[in-house]
Image (cartoon, rainbow, N blue to C red; front, side):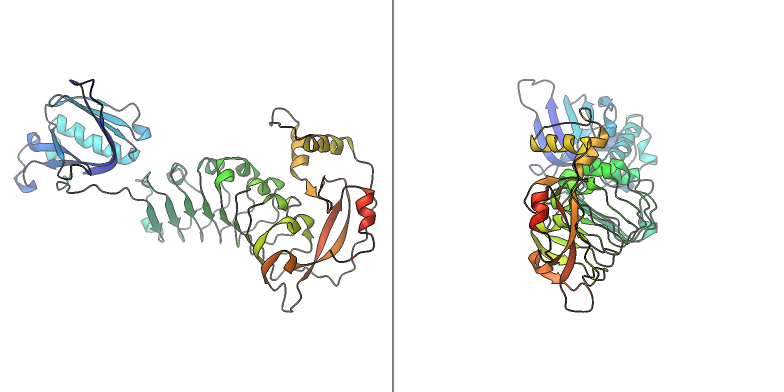
Length: 410
């Protein structure tokens, strides 16, 4: 029985001496002699193995533990106070489930019942590195009871028929890459927003939406790669585009009918795939992106249709004026300062060709765009070699409206 964790050793008789800290150490319960010769719990020792002391420091347990401090055991923290030597072994960064099992073994040793009820480890000769990567490809391998090690930074669970993301995954606060492709997920829990993920892979599931709340969480601030391919997402919230660090985005095979008008807010986006959808027109904001690769294969983006004429510019509403004032004056605000309807309106802002920001109450028309103006690498739209697509352009004023009147290419 052993665990890998952080350990700090304090000497109670030498308070002026700094505690010895070990960022990574191995704690093991081992018999003093060979296992087959173990007679009683008096022969069981706790061995602390560190990089500085690979052979380990031995602590007798039976009749030698003054107290166990377990108040913060659910956070992976505990302290074992020994009588001789007068040391406090302070445990941190441990997996809570493993720590509970380990301390249970210590407790049994204290009362003299461990020799018949637990399995002992061989004395460690080196520090075990915390497990950081784990791949599970079968349902039978999924740890329903024991959970995952807290040290994981990369987790792949594919083809396990998961219908929801459980607490075993949501408590992995060190996770950076999460791959849950080829499952049966129908929704994403909002608790996922507490994990600082850099990569999230969710292709081939049954998701119907990407919760807009996730875009304003820690996840939305750190996510760089997002794969939502082959789900059932028909539309995306304007809040989706607030995840400004995303550089790789795949939305293939979802039946999307349109892209968010504020797609230009994905300022870090470099590789974008939205093939096999139902897109008929692209928002002008996509023109502002600096893409390296663009895939729009198998979408009904047909420029042979009659181009929609310009709609007349109308006087702005009070909501439009309020949103324009907040954005133009660069007013900082929170959800408590402005009505939700106004915040939603501001979030959906889109650019005019002149560079100014416009909202919903605008004049617009359909122009034609050459895709090679968007990216250096472009995948065919259909089986022909055409790369021109319809683009919906929004105007901030009659001046901009008249400038593009009668034009087809932009």
